[in-house]
Amino acid sequence: MKSLFTGRIIRTQRLSPSSHLVVFERPRGFPEVAPGQFVALRITSTITPLLRRPFSIMDLTGTELHLLVKVVGKGSDILAHSPCGAEMDIAGPLGGTAFPSPGKKDAVFVAGGTGLAPMIFAARTWKRDRSLGRAALVYGAGCEEELLVSLCEEDFAAVHLATIDGSCGFEGDAVALLEKLVEEGKAGGGMLYSCGPAGMVRAMERKAAAGFARHLTSLESVMACGVGACRGCTVPVKTDGGTVLRTICGDGTVFDASEIDWERWEE
Amino acid sequence: MNRRSLETEIGEVTLRNPVLLASGPAGYGLEYEGLVDLERIGGVVTKTISFESREGNPGKRLHETGGGLLNSIGLENVGAEVFFSEKIPALVDAGIKPVVSLAAEDWENYRMLLDATAGTDGVDIIELNLSCPNVERGGMAVGTNPELLAKYVRHAKDTLPGMTVLAKLTPNVGDIAALALAAEEAGADGITAINTVIGMDIDLAAGRPVFKRIRAGLSGPAIMPIALDAVWRISRTVDIPVVGVGGITSVEDAMKFFMAGAAAIQVGTAVFYDPVLPEKIIEALEETGMPGPLGDCNRMKGAG
Image (tube, each protein chain N blue to C red):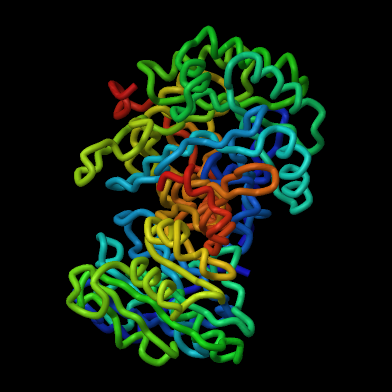
């Protein structure tokens, strides 16, 4: 059950020019969470920024809550540069659905930008409960210095890196790299998990996802309520009764990517 | 310490206290379980419903501005049938007081919506959304025209005997007090003020407006002085209770609305980031009592 908690920052680490690891002490009573769930932080006690900011959970241990924060505006900037000991109001865990585990199937995780966070949490969670078999990560960023390689070295059997400028690994984006791996027979057949910009997930669904049993994605969006009330972050989902709008915050964040009505969705 | 009773009468209804969740942000209420103590607050003004379900607007729907939030949700809702058969019973079962927000769409749909509302158990107070800026038909057109507004209010009173009817007004007019007076004369039991203020923003990088519909509704602390002024002027014009809403972000803000003449208040956008604010306001009111309305003292002269 979601609730309000006070979180205290115990560690921050600059991982790249734009990305930071922010570690909170796990608040007392904070429940177990499932991969794909998120928290919404009230960054300041003032009205600037006004809304809470949603962050995927990158890890939750007995004592720590890990968030991956990319500085994209005022809220993320304040959070990334908060001092140790700073306290923040945390609403969570939020999100009504989570990634199902791959069971005995192979798993390929595709991450774009901060979409890396829930991919890492899924891999770690399933490794801990021994429900993860062979797992590979396909991960892209703009350039080498924005690739957070140190974060993902230990959680996957194989890591395939892509950079747009070709400064590290495959030259291109994560989707193009995934397509190449599928063509070469190095990936496919099992479960496909993804998190990143909608354009990335859409491009995966257009081609590469056909090589997998199922494609599950955790969608990102600007949010206001975080609980499915305000209908600010809807996505069209195909059902037997036609296309219906679901909220990313309340009905998601995890969706079967093949069920999203990509033609109708205008992010 | 003796806690004061905060029971508040509006029309035929007695609310346990005068602090409500505003329509829109509140959703259908139960979404906030775990974050808001829903049984403690005076009531939940549910998301505006129309007779038929509505998908709302395509594209981006939320955009934060300085001290505010622009929204272009477009009255997405489940429609009357699902609302009255599923959402209302769930709220009532959970001990939550619903105030049902109804869309004033075109006349035919409005009539059918009122007919669907008639006889629903657990509903004794409605709020007519006469002022949504985010839809093509009805809404603003009704809420900015005194004769049309009066016609809609009168029809609600005629169709739903014994129902307490609040008319929610838009600030996007020259004289909101005149519209309040028209609603009162048509039989409204109370006035809710204000709905969102029309605004827009531009995506510089994309070189186009942020929203597909270009104009959207602004809420949040940026609009509080506008709302406070509206409540002040309306409460000096009509004799029915005024429910103040618009940008309340603190206990102090709520106190100002009561002093401006509000009989009750609603918290909207602030619930997104401070879900316990309604409870904090209730606690403060229990401790200090309701602040009395400002009189027309000398210092106030020239203000109204």
